[in-house]
Every structure is written in C-alpha cells, then in structure tokens.
Image 1: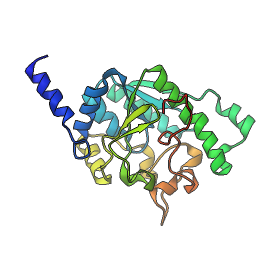
Image 2: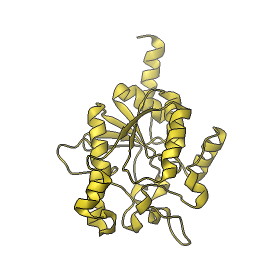
Image 3: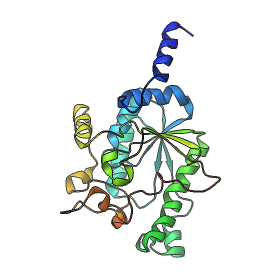
Image 4: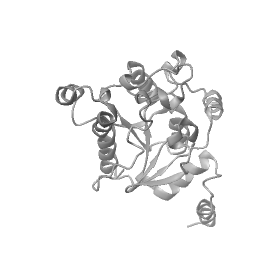
Amino acid sequence: MSHTKIAAKTNLEALDLEIASATERVRWAHETYGEQLVLTTSFGVQSAVMLHLVTTLIPNIPVIFVDTGYLFPATYTFAAELTERLKLNLKTYIPRQTAAQQEALYGKQWEKGLEGLERYNLINKVEPMNRAVKELGATAWLSGLRRTQSSSRSERKVVESQNKTTKIYPIIDWNDRDVYEYLTENGLPYHPLWDQGYVSVGDWHSTKKLGAGMTEEETRFGGLKRECGLHEVTGGSDFQI
C-alpha cells in the first residue's frame, strides 16, 4: 500500500463522523464496508439528494427500492426518470404477497389502527428490505434520514446498529434549507407531488398533504406513527435489520 493510501485510510479512521460532512461520511462508509454497502431509496420528496450524493462517489452501489405496490403513480414516473438520469444500479424488491392477496386475507390493514399498520409494514416493507440485505450480502446501509423530519429521528446518531446491520445517515444533520440548496445547485428535482403540498410521500393510502397546524410526521400513517418499520428494530432473530 502506498504512503498516500495509508494516509487516506488513517484520516478516515480518525474522522469524527458527528461533525464530518455528508461527503466524508459516504467516503468513510465506502472505505469501511466496500461491496457490502448498499443505499436505499423510497423515491420520496427529497430522494434525489441522497441518490446524487452517493452515486457521484460510488457510481455502481446497489440502490434498494422497496415497491409496496401502493405507491403514487407520480412516484413510479419519478423513479424511472431518476434511475435513467443518474444511471442507478437499482434493485427493486416487492412483497411476497400481492396487494390483492393481502386485502383478501387481511382487509385494508392501514385502516385497522396501529396493529394493522405494524402487520402491513412487516409484509410490505420490512420483509422485502430484509430479503434485499441478505441477497445482496450487505452489512451496511446508507439512508437519507434527517433529524428534523420527526421526533423519532431527532436523537439519532450518524451511525447506528439495527440488529445485524450498520446504518449510516450522511445527511442526518441537514435541514430543509440544506436540502433545497443541494437540489438547486445540482439541478435536481423534488418529487412531483411536492408542488401539490406533500412534504413526505409514501403509500397513497397513508400519505396526506401538509395542512394548517400539522407537523411533517402527522402527514404519514394518520399521525399514529412516523416510521414504516424499516428504521425500527424488528425483533426477529433471523432478521438482518
């Protein structure tokens, strides 16, 4: 190994991730986890930030997209446009049960309170993501969570462990202004529904526009919860996440 490479590695090891830049955090993750590192995207309102930031530094990183089958039509067109524009190495995962099967067996789970939402999230988001991590051999996961998005995210660190997986949040300390400036400087778009008043976009049945007096987290899941299960400990002993 050359002296230059040794110095670079030493600098990364000495990096204080809590005060590092988003770019430095991504580089650290790549240096540390190599081919066992993946990126996730929901193709949500501000997803272009992470997709551009990470793939600029790691062009061929696997990008996991969990498609519940209940996404807005605009999300699918947005996903297609960004995938083509950024040349994403997209890996799409879907639930083992179709939407029709689930509704026949369980009804509209999102209308059945917290218990229904938990089951819905397990089937449609957690299991597909867990399968993706296993099949891709990932041990580390880059995600675009930000502390300002909700109370459940306000205390998160840059790096966390979730079951058997390490999670890194490069833009965890960014605010809405930081996001806007990055998108503007790089000529990147918000999700098409942003202009219609949506500040967070997930499944069509569990996403609302931001109304008067509402917080961002109240626009998802009827305010019952903010997280969809992907960023919560599953409790499953055979789960990686």
